[in-house]
Structures are given as structure tokens and as C-alpha cells.
Amino acid sequence: MRIGELAAATGASVRSLRYYEDQGLLSPLRSQSGQRTYSHDAVQRVGLIQRLFDAGLCSKAMTELLPCITDHGKRTSELQARLLRERARLSNNIAVIERHRASLDHLIDELRTLST
Image (cartoon, rainbow, N blue to C red; front, side, top):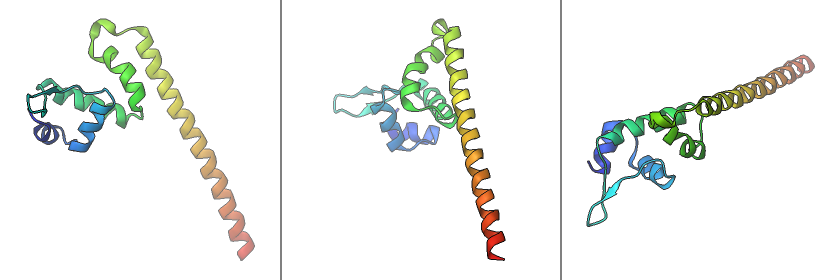
């Protein structure tokens, strides 16, 4: 399957697929003329990459985690621990954003009081 076909099958843009390749997340074969060709397994791989991006992971973390996720023999307690650390990082970010929002709400309320 060529890159345009993979893009159509996954909903990912051609640009995203090239980015995944640049980051080492997706490894197409190359034809004699240099065109990328993908196996049908690439559809599932791109879906997994998209899910990991949607979960807030960066491409560097994915490079480390994808082999552990896709190879059942490499699934260890460390994989789960790493995913739990990523979740804790996101929870911390949410807490920081909520504090910022609360501070901004307080400032807005103060400014409303001063202007009336």
C-alpha cells in the first residue's frame, strides 16, 4: 500500500505519516524508485500511534513504548508503570491549569468589583 492509501485508510494526513516515519514510529519499505510502501499492519500501527498522541504522549515516549506495546513478549510491569507515570504527569498538568484558571477567575472578579 502506498502512502496515500495508508492516509485514506487511517484518516492520517500524508504529512503526519511522514512525521511518524521521521520519528521512527513507522517504518515503510522503499520501492526501487524510492516510493514508500506499507504493509496492511501499518493501518493498525498508525491507529495505535494516533491513540497514543491523543493520550498526550510525545513521539519520544512512543518510540520507547511502542515495542513494548506491540510485542506481547516485551510487555512488562515497567510498561504499565511508565503509562501510569504519563497519566500522573497529565493529572499534574490538569491541576496546574485548574489553579491558573482559578487565579484568573479571582482576578476577573476583582476587576469587576473595581469597575462597578
